[in-house]
Image (cartoon, rainbow, N blue to C red):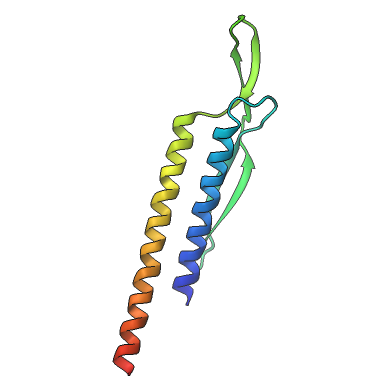
Length: 113
């Protein structure tokens, strides 16, 4: 059962990673929005956990169309899309683990029957 719990923790982590990237993308031009980061770490027992933090720096200074400096969220769309792709890969890998665990359980039941 630990295998299933570990895979589920990976799927939940992928879900949070996508949510953070989506929030950053949706608010990339929102005034006073502070960009977020998602960090995934090992539980030490095979599972993972994640933490959402404010990006450092959360905002950057850029020049607007009038030549004035303005604070904007520190959001790079290419990085957010990369984070989304990482989450997709994590989800697929953990879904494969769940399928393999199901297949192994089925085979074990067939052997014992």
